[in-house]
Image (cartoon, rainbow, N blue to C red; front, side):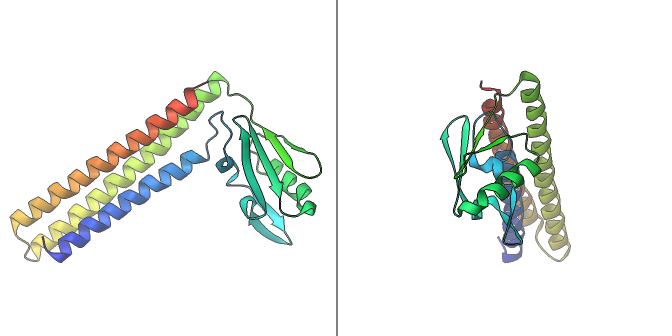
Length: 187
């Protein structure tokens, strides 16, 4: 396989990998009834006048499956963190004891579970579209290389390789989605 062809294949693989990473990151922030520090990834706190991610001003842990504990590194940050969580509109009610903040994660209703599964499937579809776009772009590059003198056999081999990679990443999307759906639907 020529260097140019290998480059096209590697680039397609990288783009497909990024689609999977994006999907996993998006799904990690979805609340599945089980407490996870990642649920607070979108929370930004005013820290000495600068918007700062919550995980950079406090330790976030899960003492049990239904509770998130937030221990600020500075005592004076308890109030701003509590305000930031409320302002993030995540549907949580933080409880502040003056030294740390606890969030009890309420159980999900059946309706909310179904809505989350739809959201998971929408994210999965976006990932699938990204993967197919990467495949299409790679195949177009191979066709350009073929016009520039790449042999027909090499082009066919490259397209087959790109299809195999696409199938692998599509299967990964299905695995990630299935795992998240199970997590959401488990009571």
